[in-house]
Image (cartoon, rainbow over all chains, first blue to last red; front, side):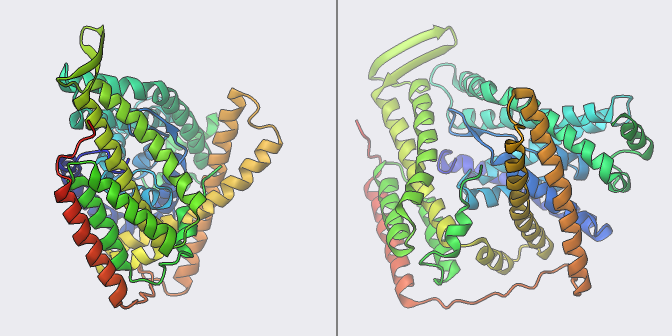
Length: 227
Length: 262
């Protein structure tokens, strides 16, 4: 939320976010040069993240719980491009809906655009070539991307406002505890929803997934068989 | 299902014709001043001035503005309470140690901290709302291009911008139809229905995006949207108002240094 983090922390998170964004922009250029048809998909995943993350529930910690929707984009384009998409979406959110804010944008990009997708992507890469079902992979990647977004948010809040007794650790546990009430069920629901969305994509537009090397052709065929 | 987008308000606000850079400077400098302030006086002063500007100059409806403010204000109140409880101080009014590592207390110092953070949120929110309510995104794209942000990033921004409206339209239609068919009558139904809606909206917008790119390609799209950068001149009166605002606010920030409630 705008104005919630002190100035020094706003700057710190911006400094962490910027190099990742620059790298993401470079990767984005490569993808866009290589495959023009990726552009509509990039746009839709961005719009999708916007819609999902604007369904917000109040939480007590100066921030609020909402689905993030970043896992899907992380699977399709990798975490760095996702961070650029996220940065654009977060900017829109602060200007369209007054969610988030400009000073805390850096912190939000780090939690929702960088760490969350990185975790989601790592899980996807780990499980991709195993015998684990494609939909289970998508479920785990998206749900954990969401969870980690909130762990990092608690981390950011606790660093800015350490408790008087017990310092950073206590306030980290407190912020996490408050988030967990809303965020754990939300992450599970988000995982289920995105896995089902993925099922639609597999059923209707499998070709682009194969072309972008998200899953191999045989995996898609197997997944379609199950669907 | 969705709140009214600030964009709709921004497209027809009273300050629409003022130079975008001036409005952005006003909003961003107010934001920085709020974050720089150490007493609660200056964020409240900035909030007062900017709210007056939004309501009187931009002629934004009072009801919309108050509603926009209430939600974050509520969050801010709750968060300020958490901070009051976890940060200690010397003059303790009340304390409680429910767990060995957790100690909650209320002291005059922690009330001061909590109140200050609340005021800072109010000040910065008013700065954000000032930008959001007076400057439509389309104007910001022009400014971004001037700031040398790569063209394809701006293009992606514009495509996302368009997709958001398309998706919302889709989602609203599908949602209404689903509600009428009792799609959200139970917990399990809700999840299935909601995923169906997301999936359908995702695929339709994707198709629409494909169509858009094809249509643009047919019209010689070379990876760069042409933007009509209407150059609104910097006029003397808004400029004078901006300079006065920044100078007076900076003075207030310095004067209210360390100002506390208790």
